[in-house]
Image: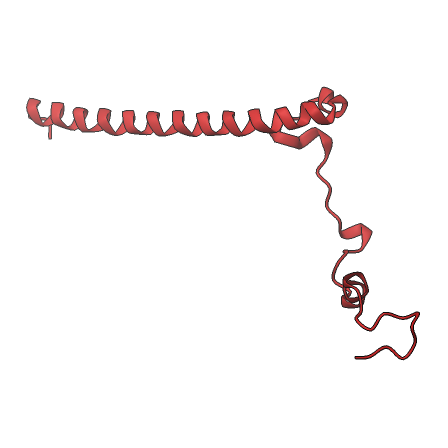
Length: 97
């Protein structure tokens, strides 16, 4: 495409192409914004007053807490399996099976 006029660009810009697609921005009623009370699984009134720096730190802490809770859950599950095996052996040994 050659430009016939020097004032117009021959190649459309990315913004022009994007605006023609029609799928870039959903209508305002379709945009889902997280409520400030339910961020990081917390429903605390104080969370609305947190600064950006504090929210970044809370995000890191939230990930660490979730990871540690999952590790604790895995450990408890393993303990339950061992306990169940030992109870079965105990019952077999006592002749209750």
